[in-house]
Image 1: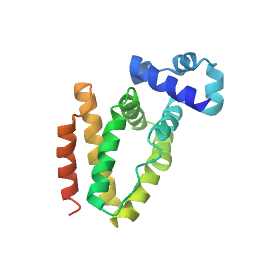
Image 2: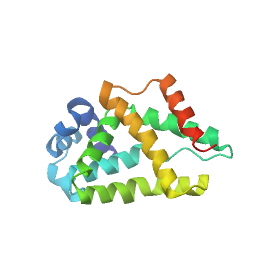
Image 3: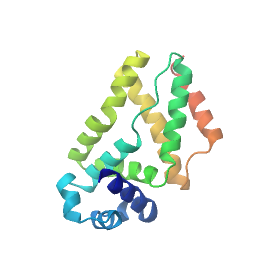
Image 4: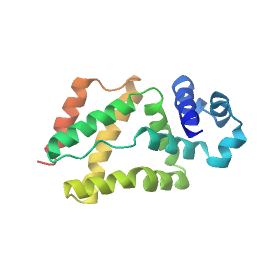
Length: 169
């Protein structure tokens, strides 16, 4: 059931944008009732977060070579954000969270916290530095999608990796 709903969610976001992807339209795309969706997810934002958790799981393995591992993770993230509907869903739920404390809490605890803890342990860096790394990478990738309507090209992803990795040398 979740796989069908998640596929319908991303398809609807890709076709209609985040704002146009209503629970009614997602339910219709999934071939289910809107009430069925609301039994599992209290809001579109909660559904989108679970959908994104599915898209971004599991994260690539962390290897011994930190630079190569981080570079691979950034390439992986850029690829995921470039998948149909994912970038728009990601940006849309972040935008909604600005004025929705409950949604912001879900994003913080369910979506960001596991990656934050894993990277803190892996890199041996402070939470503040890891947050900056996540913000710079994710924010830049989403900004590019929002500004030009398509994912960052490979050459620019490589430049972003070089700039970000300098902070951890």
